[in-house]
Amino acid sequence: MNRCHHHLIAILSMVLAVSLGFVASSALQKSGEEALGTRKYSDYQTPTFCGIQCHNDIYQQWKQAMMSQAYTHHWDEIEYFKLAVPHAEKDPVVAGVKAGCNGCHSPLAFLAGDVPPPLPSKNSRANESVSCELCHTVTGFAGDVPYNFNWISVPGKTKYGARGGTVSPEHNTVRSEFLKTAEFCGTCHNEKSPYGVWVKSTHLEWKDGPYAREGVRCHDCHMTYAPGKSASMGKSYPDVRQHLFHGAHDPGKVQGTIELRVHPDINEAQPGDRVKFTVALFNQKTGHKFPTGSVEDRIVWLHVEAVDARGNVYHLPVDKKGFEGEEYTIAADTLAYQDMGIALGDPGFKGVQRDGVPVGDRIFRMPYFDPQGRMTIQQWNTKSLGVDYRIGPRETKLETCTFRIPDNAPPGPLTVTAVLNYQKLVKPVADFLGVPADESEIIEVNRHSTTINIVD
Ligand code: HEC
Ligand code: HEC
Ligand code: HEC
Ligand code: HEC
Image (tube, rainbow, N blue to C red; front, side):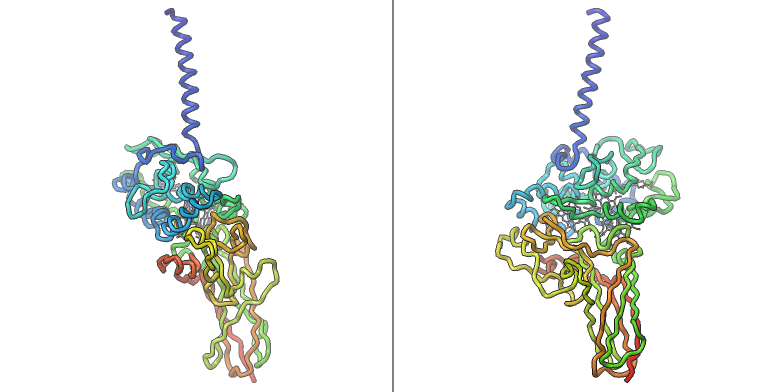
């Protein structure tokens, strides 16, 4: 063989190596549903490994956040194993969710093709939920819109992080602009149902709102920064990203989200008069709508009561506005969620109470409908959405309650109090499915009172 041949072979093998490399890396860059089963658990380190020696502080923050419990948390376990998996086995349209739920809730289990993963009580690696390694191996996302776990994860010696140039004995650190974007969060915080309906759109709501225009990202409210060290042997920084991810499961985060003020149209009234109370609800805190995320589960309602000089209590139902679909935004004594019967093997299931809050109260929600047009908490079984009556970022909604002063009301002060309440899961559903009480505890978002005088 002469030198020239050598040269040619060298070039050919380079071309081969490059094209093989290309094939290999594009095979490894699958995202969304196509990434199912393309990795092994052992391609990724465990959070304990990251946390025990180096990133202790960040590890402890993450441990307390829902990110570390997205697979193991009681309501997640119940909804996945009691409703989603059996439903997926019966209905071909939604068959994909058996694997797909974990694309966001336990991404390593999804990548490893572990479908369905063992129950949380088995302590398998699926329990790592949204782990350090998943987020810190993401290089970008496929397509134009982030949704349905279309992140691209490339595990290995290189970790993607907030800063370049940090030196770690464990891994190479590469600065990632992508991790800093709201689109990164959107890969899991936007979701389309198998019917093509946006059933989660936190990132899209943010993108349409004032915070995106001002450059305030998800991180600025959910991963706030503080001075400290991001690794025990590393340098100190003035602005270490806190891995708090505090949201609906942190009452302190929810409290005060909406400011409430209530005012009357007149200060003095006689029995038999009608007084109109206006409640202004201003969303001062969220970067997206309130409620957002699991909107099918959440319920936010305004309860208004009056107390007269003798201590008699009157409930003031909200005045109707007359918009289309309003009936879903005023609490009623009616049944819903019949489609839970599919998974539970009871196709004739009558449903449970839709709201479980005082009849006549205003509800800030967007109803989800199943293919039969019935209200559902099963976002994967959602074929259409109803009226969007949630409170947008920096939006003020006005509600009125017109109250006829009772004929026998005593003279003296009448105090009217408006209270805004929040529940993560509508209580009748929580009770029916045996979800522990903390998921349906009532969190008071805010309250305000005003007083008028009753004269003879
Ligand atoms: C790999 C998917 C994934 C990515 C990426 C992701 N999240 Fe999440 N996030 C989840 C899941 C799943 C939950 C729900 C946990 C549960 O089951 O309650 C969640 C929950 C949350 C919560 C709510 C916690 C609560 O108390 O209710 C916040 C806030 C949050 N994420 C913020 C973010 C931010 C900010 C980013 C981007 C920096 C982000 N997430 C990126 C999957 C993800
Ligand atoms: C200006 C601050 C702010 C910004 C920006 C912001 N959020 Fe929030 N977020 C909040 C507050 C306050 C709450 C608590 C009230 C609530 O549950 O909506 C919250 C709640 C949440 C929840 C829990 C919602 C629920 O009801 O379960 C999630 C998930 C979440 N945010 C994700 C995000 C993501 C993803 C982004 C970026 C696309 C983002 N947030 C941007 C302030 C913010
Ligand atoms: C949901 C995704 C997500 C998870 C889970 C996650 N991180 Fe992060 N992490 C981020 C993002 C996003 C940033 C950078 C934010 C920025 O700078 O804007 C970050 C930043 C960091 C930093 C640099 C902090 C700084 O400011 O110097 C370290 C170190 C880190 N993460 C370690 C960890 C460890 C360890 C875990 C697990 C215990 C973990 N992360 C879990 C998303 C995540
Ligand atoms: C595209 C990503 C994604 C997919 C797919 C997904 N989820 Fe979620 N899920 C989330 C995020 C993000 C949250 C948190 C939203 C919030 O805090 O309001 C969440 C919240 C939940 C919650 C509420 C947790 C709580 O404690 O309030 C349950 C239960 C749940 N998901 C179950 C499922 C099931 C079952 C499936 C499959 C049918 C599924 N999810 C598919 C991203 C996803």
